[in-house]
Length: 512
Image (cartoon, rainbow, N blue to C red; front, side):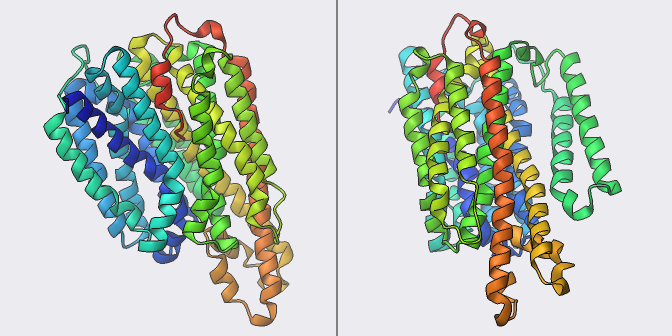
């Protein structure tokens, strides 16, 4: 087989692996929380540590690869991702797992940032379209099968197996990369924006940390206030650095085009509203409804498989339908689906979510191909890598900030409902009970209740969890609908450059 096809195999294998870890982990989180005795905030960090490092280092990794060599940097990313996957599986504590997940995110950022460049150096013309389409199908497949694969592995072999799976695949990919992939670099590359990288990472971390810990430490506490102020200040320094540097990691001038800003807003909105919600829906299905990891993965199929199918069917609609219609309609469907999931009570079954799953899944499938083509279709071809990286960064920031923001509202809503529903003798402990319930420990809490009061306590706890979920579903639905409005206002056909980039559009056809 020719070298270019081996390059495609390597890139698709690595991409499948790193994106699978975005969706596969959610289904395993209740098992992780139980075995590692993780708190609610630690559960959030298991997801956010990965999303934050991936978002923070994506643009820097691309610039570094152009400077020192794409194959070299890609290989380093593969090795790091494989090693940290092993460490995730071996994690003896939640803190250890969170640190290892951050390492996975760094490796994932490196691989994702260099994937398209490796394909572009090997494929030209029509073959490049085939390669990008295969890469896009890989991304869609990872998003579609992630919850099901996570459920199967967790139930049959334990949660650690979802990380061990990456080890043999990673070793295989490293061997192929070293023997079959050619080295390349950008002769015009000069430097890496380390100031931008540090300030962007620090700013995001401080704000997300403050939001996750705010309910526990107190929103008015000196620590939380300092973190929020420090985070905003760091992001301010980041913005100044981007405006004043010649080789900035973020080309701020791209946002002068309303359509590019609209694409960034859509990327953030769909990830904040829908993909961050998967964590809380998983906790509901497993810890309140008592479903197994496998049963949970199966329940998510209406979302994941429908988004994959609709994305494949709608990939070419942009040539016939204004792209803002696709983006606006898709996000409106996501918002409607989230709102349709509301109305949960202590006695609801999972089927109460089904119609919302179907509607939002169709919406995601409409958004993703149109979003990919918009993100790179409004810039010159030589800026497509930067544009795609920025859009992916907004996606990951959306996930990280959504998980943090929803968590604060969710825990507060549960605590409020428990305080009014529990007997006075235990109402004072509603905050601690809410933290345990939000973190997936509802069954354990209920087992500790005297048998005579257990039926009533079950109704109160399940009702409180449902109320909290209803609140964040409302917020998510509103964010998605606002994103739909922004898409309709900002994404204009006149902003698209003369060339059309349908090939890379397939590349992000179904990722979140």
